[in-house]
Length: 88
Image 1 (cartoon, rainbow, N blue to C red):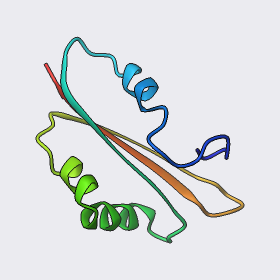
Image 2 (cartoon, rainbow, N blue to C red):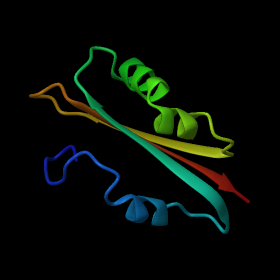
Image 3 (tube, one colour):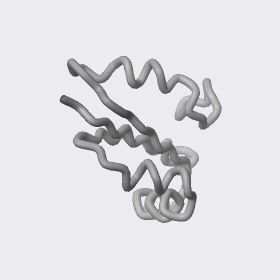
């Protein structure tokens, strides 16, 4: 997404999920965001909070979370992904 090779979407989630090293996963969720805010984490959280499906994922009952972010220097765009899972 950040390189422009793919649009911002949940496409490829299965590959990102497959990269999680664990024995058993009961459930998994993902939130993604792209913004150019001076405070990209705050903007992402505010956006996820007002969107019902993202909010449901954000406040779901998960036991593990992983977050990745990258800012593109020449555009200021920040891409953020959050993957939550219930692991055993």
